[in-house]
Length: 189
Image (tube, rainbow, N blue to C red; front, side):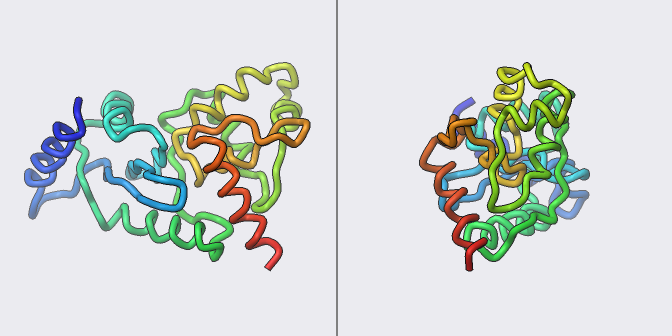
């Protein structure tokens, strides 16, 4: 599906519910300090805040969550405002509920542990492994973090290598460093 096809589908989808119920899944984007993030919000919370291309996220959401998808500013704008506040250093904890429907059961366990890593601090794969009782599952933990569907909000950027090196990140090394710098600056001010 091309970007133009996705835009056309969203226009058709959004025109079908004017005056009717909003879509089950609000879908849109956020352009911020680390680039474009693709957002999907369900009735349970934010299911995607992804660096992946819009088409890929759209297909994943339709396959695993539902098909009635469209723009819905009433549900997207609060997430965008929180992202703005986070990137400016004014928000340390997101209040938007997280919907980890797009993650596997094991990944949900890893991501929930990651959500407990305090703002402005880091942890390692080894520490996460120990905390979930899977100290040798480092590759699986790394894969769970790499497939995090709710980047930034579920702070996998706070996981670094045991030697202190950044390690991989879906948004790239520069994005990961930027997120850590935002938190470091806000924590020291």
